[in-house]
Length: 179
Image (cartoon, rainbow, N blue to C red; front, top):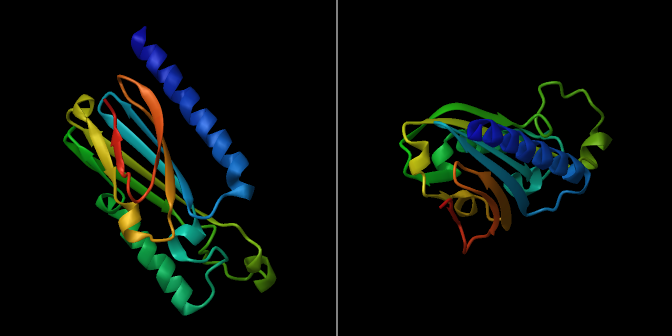
């Protein structure tokens, strides 16, 4: 029964955060990102949504070779989960990574240049971990501020076996305490 309650709570948390993030899509705030973390059984799911401007310095479709190279380099950087977050405990191994740059970099570059000027593109990042002892994860340290100077705040919402909570992080406060 408790496991069912956790699953319902987890689904509710992600539904609410997804709706909130979708509603914020048109009015995202430069320098601010949103992250959700869910720990259930031996799995950890992490999702980050950030304005492309906060990670790249622009949010129009990448057109020039320099812009395209910058997007590709950012994507390669984010694929390494240690550049984003470090968990303390849990013995976690990454099992799936998805860095979605479709808003900013598409292989179909036939749209009109004027459309690129007015977009509010976002980068979406998803990590899935398998952990030997997920219940032993005590904290995590966000690494994003070291690599992306335009990123000012990350609002984190999380759900673990013990509690759910949220915190606003910045360059001076980078640790999430799950206990």
